[in-house]
Image (tube, rainbow, N blue to C red):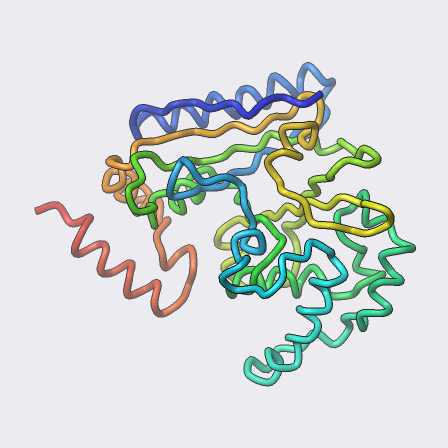
Length: 286
């Protein structure tokens, strides 16, 4: 039996720091109670507190996809077919990816059920390729997190949803030793050390993937129900910190002083222009 999602109302940006300190103290208490067993803490910011933990693959149907297939094998065929065009226009190469029949065979013989994906020995370069696709807009089954609560807060306040009264920072306290339960969706944490785009490291990125096995088929499953059911382990939990949207300017001003801004997070020319514009138009005190 898991724990329900815990919602904490944070009345102001100034109190966000205290809420984060409390959360890390909770982790220390949980680890002490479990004889030093390690519990991970990851964060994810969203621009509307009504938004859940949906991957871009889940959000892409039906607008960007002709099928809502949840099969890992079907998705792999799509991304494998996309590789030649991407290599042609980017000069990037992923030469070791297995052809789809070999990938299907690797799934049958791998420990993907406990690891979330086939290992690098079974499907070389797959994780690196998935991260590249995730960072460049391809619908992805990876849910991106960050090890920094302040980077997560930046994502929450950077692009607030239209009409949103509150943004949210999700905090996942997860038992790193928790194994999978047979017949249940399994949330696996991937990363952080992999060859990737610089923004992967700038954002202190981690990723999760949720997979269940049904009649020998590997299927993508929604994260949030799996996490609250038992996907965070017996002592783990999902916490949702809700902050007022009206605190946006104050939050972005503080984050700018920490050098957390569009350019430091994304590193592109467009994000540089956006950072300069924000400094001049929003953050400069008159």
